Image (cartoon, rainbow, N blue to C red; front, side, top):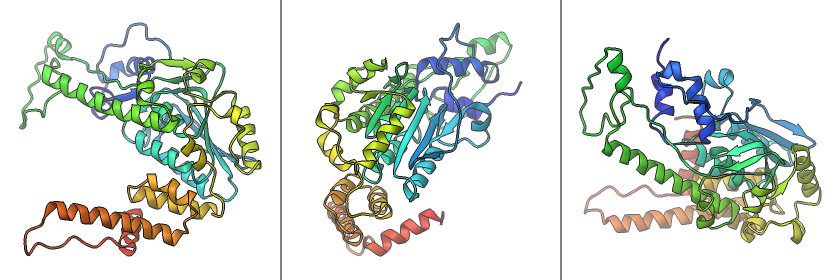
Length: 386
């Protein structure tokens, strides 16, 4: 049976945001192809379904986030129950642009997956709060990378048997050297660069390579902690105190990882009611204590904007690497042209500050001026792949 080196590179020695039980199941299923020993008696993780398309249910776009999550997949997701961050992002963007959609509900049933692409999508979801109401339901699993996405929604439902959490990062390494010896194989690596062969599966994991992998795991873990803390309006310390634990039903609500116990239909009904009331803040007794006041204020679509106008301002802020300005601009009712002008001013000021700090030598070519035309021409070229 052939080896799958590319798949192995994505599963072994790389940080993953996936519940360990699901990781064991994947390794067991691919043990022959990846030449790894199947984990002994792996704990089973909840099975997930793969439904790639969104549904419009009475103005609510229900977007499935199901199966193991990867950045992009091609042929793999159809046969392996995978979902890609790119596909989920495309569904969200389509729902934001759809005039028949008033709100978005993420129907999540996933134990997590790859780190790559997860936080970019989490930021997109977080910013969509100011364009259309976007909620999530753990139906039934929202673990690790899947929870990073769920937490980005402004309100999170969880079923009675549903789980949330596993806010942690993990990496597997498999040493093939013993198996190679038994098979009479003696691999030889020829390489340049002291760390080029770090983490090779054909040799024991050295201290330096192990430290490098651990350092990257810790770095991504901190991004995960900070992302959830921002999304849920709780402190990084409280988020870290969960110690990557999994919490179910009302226990997830108690620790601040979810807002309400309810089914997918419950969440659809609640979101529909929220929208029919003009997207007004919920009664004080129903607002979770963990929710940040500024986030609550920015959650509904601001009055005076069309969905397209609000989406344009939010996208401009994201593309200008100033996502924090979206809530400020939308909340103040700044017109689109004025919002673009403010972004240009902020970027120009930042560019000038960097230029002054670098103190270019006499005769050096000056940095290009950041103006509205150049920013939006860059956007056009990027969108067309130029």
